[in-house]
Length: 197
Image (cartoon, rainbow, N blue to C red; front, side):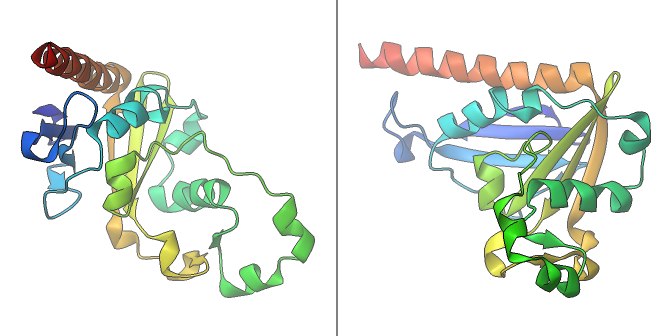
């Protein structure tokens, strides 16, 4: 089942019973669409649809952070580096020189800003990150493909912005999508619980 409009932002979740042991262990196909683009070229099975559900319903996607208008409306190339550096301060730098120039004590005092990251379990498997910001009645969703495990750090001066996708939707659209995922998951769990009786 697809929740939302793939031409904007949508999440597909379908249970594959052959992979699952309901109601305790549910696996299936999960895909994400943004601007009519499938974020991954292939279907991906998740270790647990329940984990995606938790990440979506209890996470940042359900409660996007408010930002100032100038941040919300800025070019993605201007705001994404700041968001990435705040979220991954140990891994994301403007250059190799900045990375190598940090004093040893700096690493002990840096905090991660988790407020804008809405990445859920399946996106991690796609090596995709999802960041979300809100201004008044609109929400901006930004996805990018990168893998922190590929190297010691990310050098933004060499970062490939070809892997960045973004869309702006209204708050009601996004909250409706999250509610549909929540309602579907609750109904699915009730169905499988009844099947066990």
